[in-house]
Image 1 (cartoon, rainbow over the protein chains, first blue to last red):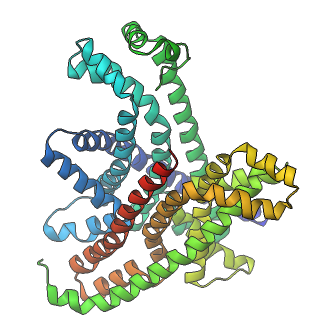
Image 2 (cartoon, chains in turn cyan, green; image 1 turned 90 degrees about the vertical axis):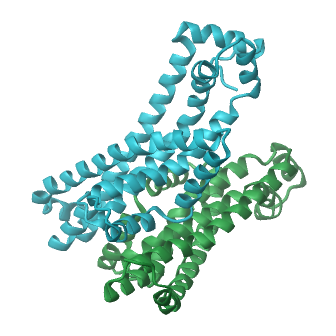
Image 3 (spheres, rainbow over the protein chains, first blue to last red; image 1 turned 90 degrees about the horizontal axis):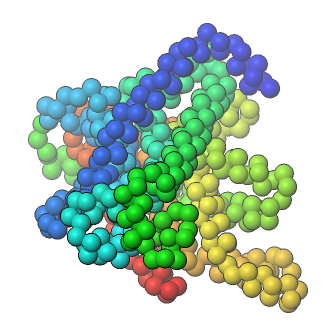
Length: 247
Length: 219
């Protein structure tokens, strides 16, 4: 209750905090545009037939997974400019956080694609599908359903990562929370409100992830006719009885 | 700016003392996360009316908010309520409690995998509850999830770098102190990354090996 009472005196600061929330969502959106493609590219390289490509992807993944995103962000913020690379704090944060999360998520992609039964691949080959069609029409649609829960988790992790940008001068929600509590002294109220804002955002993301997953499953089950025919051909009778044609 | 090895040797002792603080903090936080996570998982498993939903909400909240802001809250806001903690204790407790939300989920998976027949056997033998949990259920639940718990300890070790924001004299704090007094950023901050990597990578490899071993023995 004391928190609520203190919260009412924070009225004038709400627009300032909301602006920070907007910056957080902006970092989140930009970062997602980076980490999603990175995850697929790294996974593809990791599973490539070319050894140098596999080694390079493995190196990048282990490099980014070996320390916290914050260490990498500080490195980009303090060291890269010395090498003449001048990026705005926002740009370098989005790139570094995106590469970091992309490295983790590439394992989700790889795991899902490997999980799609080997028989599926063989059957598609037997049917004379080109490698590209085999991937696009048979393996990917099934793998993507498997990836969705992992991606939802990655998105929530990424939302939390975005708070790191406050430590390299980007005025996001965490940054402004610190500024407002400095100005008003209402420490508990400010951080309490900001924690709730982050929590609401993560709940929205989690629900959106579940919704998207359900949508993909529905589309997968009843959408593209060609895919439907293919899945019926490619899955054993017992499996095609099930609602979702998953391995 | 070029890399200077002599500068590296000069700052290495300070960085290693920071690393020691980092290791101590993450080990202490691991103890909290491992014990608290198990207690939460056992409490939730019993589906007690009011307590289980509250625990679920707390876990969701801990998992849905940034550790950074949680640290700010514990370190800067709680003293107003008479709970004044040193930076190290505040950092360790926050890190440990935060990760207990993750370990609780891992334990839950383990507990749910214990065959139902074990519970029937416990009932038939009339084992006291505490004995049933600690001598029968928990040991069986633990074995297959141990590598996963190990992964969370490594994650905690890496995340502990955030304790820098509440002035714990850990590795990154030491590096930034050196950088701010000498105006050389290249070596200290690069070394932070190298030192973290040098510990977490071999540990992650070892756990991956262990995981393969464990999953093989359960086939």
